[in-house]
Structures are given as structure tokens and as C-alpha cells.
Length: 203
Image (cartoon, rainbow, N blue to C red; front, side):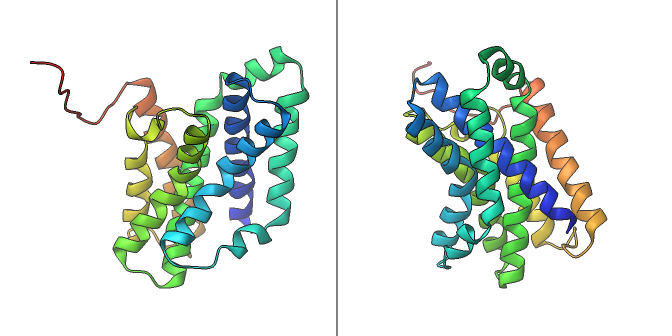
């Protein structure tokens, strides 16, 4: 199935991101693997808990777990200069993961029979839940709540699928949405797009 490739890329991208954050916070090998595993899988678990669905199927994707572990091992054991080289591309890997997981979450909610609100909610939780979990475990302010436009793109993916602008049974439409979300995320990063926030400490 073509979408399996996107799942593989998304899991590897988020596992890489989690491991990099763990190393930057000087976590030991156990902490690095825990943070690296939590980042790609926490979003699906949080989504299922929020939607009152079983979480067991998240752990039934055995090969994705091994991909995450392998990615974390590469980050931890490979030479530092190799890791730092790939870290420069982390924004693009993160955009891939965000897009793939948001679309996956929305498609999952549609297949489960949830209405529009549930589809959007599932897209957001699946797309950004792992990154939020990573930041909380690393004792950082979650990036999704204060930096750039991030969760909005996951919401847009859910809206497009929930309103049937994109047919989840049409591979071309799904991949088109996938690349559109990636493009929007990368543009928002490089152009410095931000949502408006209120500063209580400025007159």
C-alpha cells in the first residue's frame, strides 16, 4: 500500500526529532530511546484516548516500531558531525511527519465514522500530539503552542478530509494534500508566519 511508505517516513522523521531533542537536553541512552519512541507514537495514542477508542492497534504496527528504534540508534551511535548534518534538514522531516500523521489521523476518524469535528480533532492530535509529548518530556514549552503556524496545517488537513474536499480512497488526492501541507509548513517556517498573540506585558 502506497500510504505505508509515508507512515515509514513519518515515523522515522519524528523518531529522529525526538532523539535529537533528547541529545540536546543531555539525556542518557535510555532517555534518548524513550523520547525518540514517544514522539512518533504518542499522537496516535492520545487521539484514541480522546476519541474513546482502543489504543492497542497503535502497537500492532510492529515494523514501524523497529524503524523508530533503528532511527534512534543511528542518531545516538553515529558520528556527531553526521547527526548535525541531518539535523539541518530536520524542519523538512518534521513537515513530512506532521503532514503524514495529520492526514492519517483524519482518515482514521473518517473510517471510524466520526463527524467533521471528530475528524479535525483527530488530525490535530495525531499530527501534533507526538511533538507536544516530546517537548513536555524534555521540559520545554511545547513549540506548537507558541512558535510559527504548526497545528493550523494539521487542522487544515482534517478540514479538507472531513468536508470531503479530498477523497481518502483516491491516492492522488491524498498525496496532493500531503505535499500541500508540507509546502505550507515549510513556507510558514521560512517566511516566519505566526498566529497573533496578545502580550500582556506591553502597554
